[in-house]
Image (cartoon, rainbow, N blue to C red; front, top):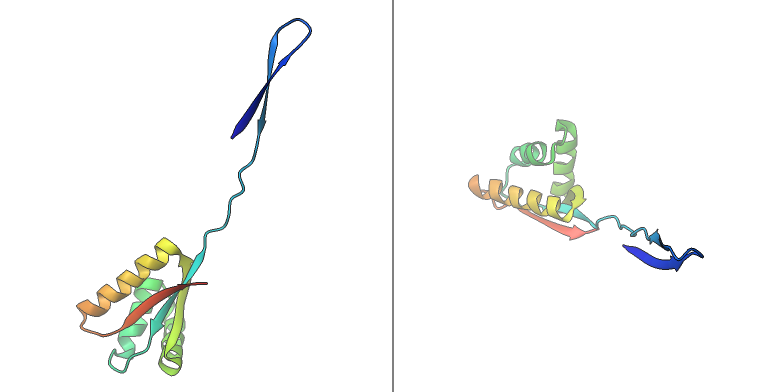
Length: 109
């Protein structure tokens, strides 16, 4: 945005002064992608899914899977809204295509 002011000097020439205002940008809201435990989805599938969709190392994927198994819910990652929404959709799609009842959701951090 700019603001212009007309100033007249003594010679009658028009002089314009332009001042810029810097817009304040905010960091985007972040969302946690949560995996919910169930008694039917194989642990190996969950580990594979964490490695495939969330790019987790095998050890990290295993630890997240165990946390979900023991605590009924676990965080897979924290992302902007669009990325979190996409990852939830990918998890749900892969689970359904492999006939698993696995649930995934997201919530604002």
